Image (tube, rainbow, N blue to C red):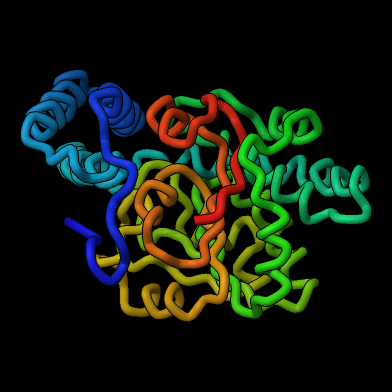
Length: 294
C-alpha cells in the first residue's frame, strides 16, 4: 500500500523498534481472545513470519494492521478488545463531571484546556499496554502543557473554518473528545466525527461513539475499513470526500498521525507520544503532549 501521489508521501517509516511493539499487540489480542496457549503461540509465530518480509518503508501502523488482520483470522475473534473497550468507556463516563470542571481553570479559553485533556486522554490505550486511568488523565491535564504547541495557529485556522473533521482514536478517550466536540459546536462549527468501520485493537467504532454520546451530538462516519490509522487509498469514498471537503482536520493519536502526516491537508495532530520512534521523529520525549500542525 502506498499513499504517494495525490495524498502525499510517507514521512514516518517503521523501524526495528516497532517489531517488539507489534508482537506485544498480537500477544495482548491473543490473551484476550483465548486461553489456548497453542493458538496464542501460533498467532505470534505467524506474525513473526509476516514481519520477516514486511516492507519497512511503510508506517508502523500499516505493518501492524497487516499483522493484526492475520491474527484475528487465526484466533477466530473479530473483536478481542471488546470488553476492555466497554470498560474504558464506562470508566471515562464516570469521571466526565470532574473533567468538565477543568475548564474553570481557564474560563477565558476553555478550548485550550479541553485540547490538553483530549491529548492526555490519548494515554487511555490498552492496545499499548498502558495502565493510565481516566483519573490519571484529569491529573495530567492540570500538570502538563503541550511540548509541541501550535495552538495559536489552531485558533486562527478554526476561526476561518466551518467544516471540521475530527478523527477519533481509542475507546475511553473518546468520552473526553466529546467535550472538545461540544465546544466546537458551541462555536458554530459543523463537526463530523470519524470512527473505524469495524474493530481493530481498542480503536473506537460506531458502538463506542454511541455509548459516549457523540452520535447524538454530531454526524458520525467511519473510514470504511478497519485499518489502524487512516490509509486514504483504501478508505471509503464517503470518508475521502469528507476529508477532502473539510476546512480543518483534527486527528487524534499516533496511528492517525503516522498515516496522515504528509497529506498536505490542514490537519492538526493531537496526541500523547507513546513510543520512542514517534518521539525521536518529533524531537520530543515519550509521554509528551503534542498539538502539531501538518
